[in-house]
Length: 209
Image 1 (spheres, rainbow, N blue to C red):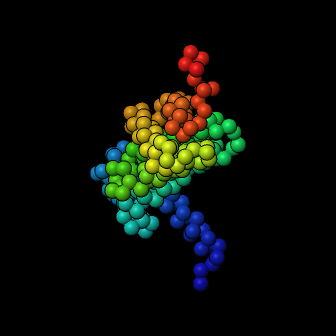
Image 2: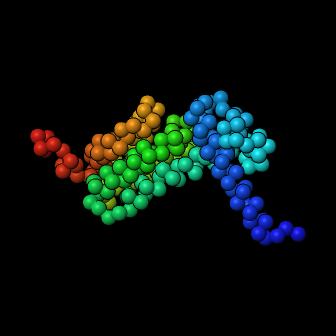
Image 3: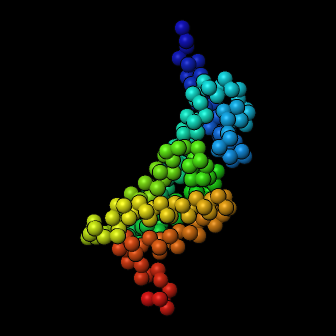
């Protein structure tokens, strides 16, 4: 008979080992890239045996997908939290973008995993796709209700806007590991506001008003 306390201790140890493997994957993919990475590489960096690795994940792809989804949850939470705060629509959009970019800049390895490395490893690009979809949904919510669904700010249009913004962010991450990302927030807000029928006048230099 297993003592409940012993069972609980085993669960804690297993959870810690799983986290150790995920951290090892993030470190390993940063060193070696996603394409040639192996489960043995991850186990070595994590400081566990290949057997330990396979006790928690069937293969490298399962581990990679798990790490990406967990990392993206961390990165997207500030976006949703900032957007939920009542503000005038343009300020709400800029605050949400600033929160997202701040999270990406603070956690560059997680950001690179999700937006730079995951498209190479995942044939369906599910993590990158989720990031784009999350931003597109925020843009839909930012759009004033009076805007016609046949206007340029249609759901498909917002998906294109989100895809372009995310591609720019991913390129910055690939070039400089998040350096200067937060400075993009007001620039992206100014670019996204007109197609969303948000009023950008307050953001423009006086010479352009």
